[in-house]
Image (cartoon, rainbow, N blue to C red):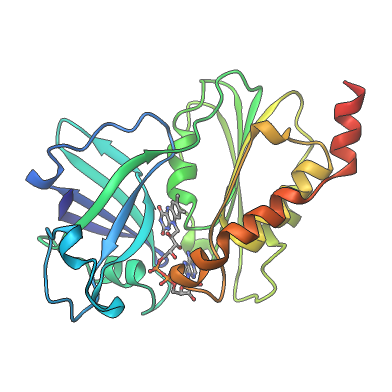
Length: 275
Ligand SMILES: Cc1cc2nc3c(=O)[nH]c(=O)nc-3n(C[C@H](O)[C@H](O)[C@H](O)COP(=O)(O)OP(=O)(O)OC[C@H]3O[C@@H](n4cnc5c(N)ncnc54)[C@H](O)[C@@H]3O)c2cc1C
């Protein structure tokens, strides 16, 4: 499946909105979950083929000519207009996805597989907590729009500075805490420290913590070790890893996720034992 760029918009210096449309989206299926994603194929500059391409036909090309897959959240799908909205983080002139978004113009094409479904806010939860950086902001924004009306929703979002903040909307009672990197380099605990400073929520919390791997791991520790969120109500996904491109990250991601899942937290175990 592929889409043709209808429009682009620089939401912030670090986040570009790309709206895709056209005949190539005729078979796109409405995602069931709030947080769904597509696996996009970004072509290297010297690719001897264009979009659409036959996946089987490019499989045997040298690695540097094959498409580079990157997962991107479905920010919105409008079946009536047949338009798919993707918000893509840009981080300088690096990265196949980031660079493509930075330079995308109407008429450009993007091929992808999906959508695949992910997290949806549990309607039975008493409140919601969504945490992440620019890569997770599209999913956070989509999830905040899909919570039951009137329930408390807290978003803790890491961006570069005030210019990196976007408008977020929810039928819930929304509180947004923006956390600014502001040129800092010790970033692993920035979100975790902000989450630690939050007032303790009452009742059951449905939480979504996605983004940079070390940052999501640190937030997960805070939430589980303090018994703020139960493991089964926590969606935690390391989207990317600082210092690695997606190829490098995917090569070690399984090992990382196993190590994270093996971490145990006495406070959580104690809380559970008492119930
Ligand atoms: C299910 C899922 C959904 C996702 N949804 C989105 C989405 O909606 N929008 C989105 O932008 N990303 C999203 N991501 C993350 C995205 O797939 C990765 O960040 C991807 O590595 C970006 O590819 P790239 O080609 O731009 O950079 P790469 O070629 O992978 O990396 C180049 C360099 O940029 C760094 N880098 C990568 N991502 C970032 C970043 N966000 N900020 C700063 N530096 C970075 C890398 O560490 C590396 O040094 C999602 C990931 C998953 C698993």
